[in-house]
Length: 290
Ligand code: FVH
Image (tube, rainbow, N blue to C red):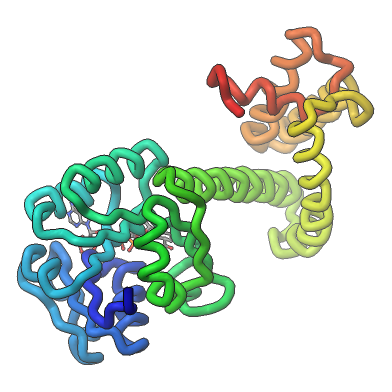
């Protein structure tokens, strides 16, 4: 199937507007729609076509990209035009379950569905730092890979439409807890008058070096080999000291208290001699998780 040269983008927010502009600049005849009028002036100046309705926007191209707000906004926008949709690439942030629901909804309407998770900020779109994870229809991915690669380095995570979102949100979980930990550290040293910039100069190389342990942790949890590393009984008092130091400095210990509670749970279950990484087992609540 030859690559289409027309594309429709629904949603011209901070991300959608950049996606539409990148396609227009890459030579796609880009049709746009936004719930609130007035966000398409620059795109029209670049040659894009602003459709007055979702129906007309969808009719203008063989592929529609939805870059809206959330799962509900995708349904609110597309349910009325589902019979006229041929191919949908949804880059709106949704949970894995919501992506799977949208894939089933699409299948029910004969719509080719690809779920996408953009691992980039709007300014990174078009750069090699940007990545877009996809999952769902392999045929849609293959047919529109050139379009996806206008924005970012694309990858395909299989026909389970929820996988792109799962990988995306799992990595974002690691990012946000890391950010919270950094800001907790900055608040602790900040309580003694140390500027966050000075703390960052020390913390950045240290924390970057700690990411080398991810491979070791991955092997430990994959093999359930929880003996031989730093035991919970050794770690818990260190976490307690960090929490006491935080309290002494008048700083909320919440981030480290969360980590400590995961360790204390394992100790209470009799795993005090096991490695810190065994908190993974406590996190895997769902029976039958991999
Ligand atoms: N911005 C980013 O860095 C991140 C990067 C990773 C992926 N996210 C996701 O992308 C989706 C869009 O994000 P955004 O930054 O463009 O978001 P906004 O600037 O808030 O624009 C939201 C657009 O959605 C439209 N919208 C909201 N509610 C509805 C609705 N009920 N029906 C139809 N459209 C709706 C909104 O329209 P308007 O407010 O201008 O009328 C905007 O076009 C998002 O899932 C991120 O998580 C971005």
